[in-house]
Length: 135
Image (cartoon, rainbow, N blue to C red; front, side, top):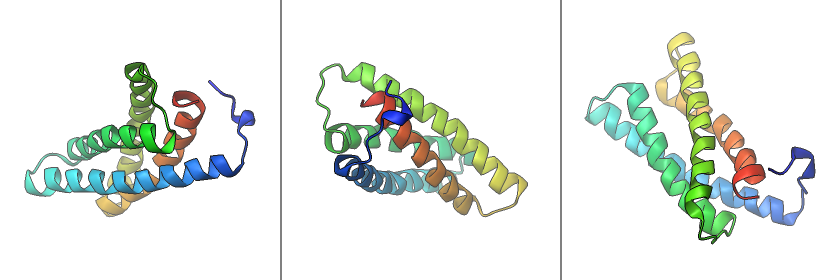
């Protein structure tokens, strides 16, 4: 695992950050679409629906980030995906905690709370994956 102090804030870093943001936006659409479908149409509990959206987006984001953002073609992709998935599970726990705080405790709109959680968790995901999964 690369230490945080070892990050070089050069053009390559910012290009990866931009690509990660684009992939993240695509993942946001996947996440919200699956969440909305499960919560509103299938009447699944909001945390289960949100977790399902998160999980589907995690899979698609992994593939896009692996191949496009970080240009990784290592055949040992299951080990890499395991690292990615563990980081995303931490992100999921953080996301659900933030949604609980913002929606259930502070009474924000569910989707606004989810959007805020996505922004915060995206930062966690980028740095953790940059330093650990794809280093």
